[in-house]
Amino acid sequence: DIQLTQSPSFLSASVGDRVTITCRASQGISSYLAWYQQKPGKAPKVLIYAASTLQSGVPSRFSGSGSGTEFTLTISSLQPEDFASYYCQQFNNYPFTFGPGTKVDIK
Amino acid sequence: QVQLQQSGPGLVRPSQTLSLTCAISGDSVSSNSAAWHWIRQSPSRGLECLGRTYYRSKWYYDYAVSLKSRITINPDTSKNQFSLQLNSVTPEDTAVYYCARELTSNYGRIDFWGQGTLVTVSS
Image 1 (cartoon, rainbow over the protein chains, first blue to last red):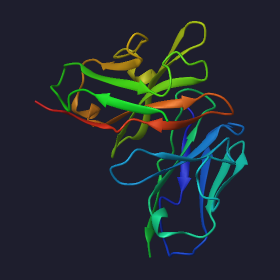
Image 2: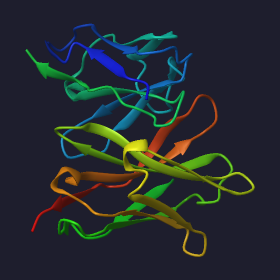
Image 3: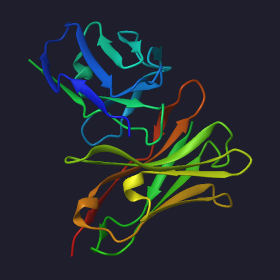
Image 4: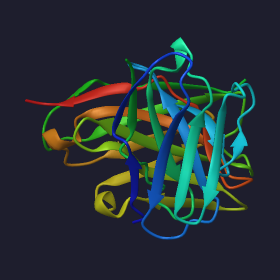
């Protein structure tokens, strides 16, 4: 199985901050990567797919980049509703593994 | 708008079979552009893809290797739903279980999820 790691595991930030989360794959996955946001008690919600394509309806402050083994999710200006956990998922090979998550908390 | 409605028990005894169903509205289980997943989430294992089914002139199935001997996913075209059966459960199978739709075009993504079912394995 392809392993995904995320860094940091936890970050504390303020409203208006620029936030970057990194996801690394154990082998090359081209652009077969999606990013999700999850709030407590809810299912994940897709933000980005194909590494850099914004899902319809998602605010433009979210962006994704990368290919191969290293990817980033950036929130350009953190909003109160963005405090949540974020996960990457690869679609290169089944099983479509997830990263362990990054929790974004209020500073 | 796609909706996925999960049903099934929240408590399963050890060594018994976990059974969940996901009813689909707004799409078809036989769609040529979707795949239908079961995913679970627990504090110890995180988010974990268990298996999926999809139709491309015939039915295909993918399962997590660690579960291959215990898991079955079945599509039901007459009811437009799909189901999960996980045999011989142990407390390690305790998790929130989700059904989900994957759009298989353009590198893939999971864009719709069921509401989640907390399944506890306990005597």
